[in-house]
Image 1 (cartoon, rainbow over the protein chains, first blue to last red):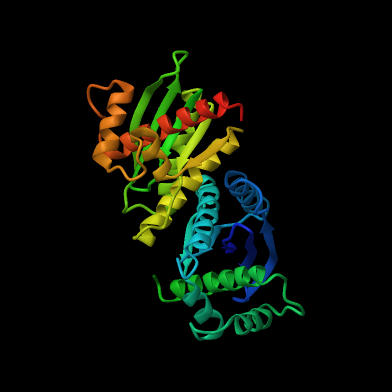
Image 2: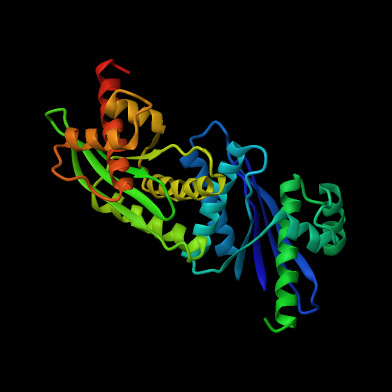
Length: 164
Length: 164
């Protein structure tokens, strides 16, 4: 299974492609960030995120899109932009008839570190370890997308193992 | 100028087409609602809103998309869905190289009734009066979209008149 994982955002949108190999391990094929200019109009920024995700979905032969579930948290204004970036990513996938899944930040942290309350540094450390990376991609949004991809690959494997 | 006005929402998304005639008055060409099923997956619902708005933009020969600006208000969860519906509408327009504008609910109320604090009934009453409608479209989301369309047509006219 090959997963495109998106840590949604308007200014920086983390993207990663993670694959579960025949050895049962997670491998990373891509990790990066889509950036849009806060000075640009919202509609244009959404289009840029959509176009970039659409291209990744097409070129990387992806089976499923996974998006980190957005919560309002503290900054509602930022959360709205994040939710809108997530929306156009989901649209791009469903237009290609690809399934879309969401995981919460707590699920991702728990999958990767064993604790839903792990901090960013701990998540990054474990992502590097799990994927055998000598260096972590920057900025952290790319690492967060890798963590989300690992989470989905592992949860799907578990779901299959228990016959769900 | 012909405007597609959208009062965004996931469960009910109000849409209206309003035109400024050569007489300087606003005319309505369409008013309705796009509905999606809350039981369906979010990605599918966003696609349904996108498809419907895309079709309106294509078929109605629209010059501009206007979307009511989303605020978090009380229910953050609803606001997120509303923001996501707005996002895919804006994407549909920008993909057709149409300009996208947003107005706040206060701007819409002020344009139509003279008061930014008017209630829904007052807005609906004035929409019917301005457009010369015998009957208001239902549900209220369609009327709200008409109000937004009138607001944009009038504000554009004023902007031209003062040479902006």
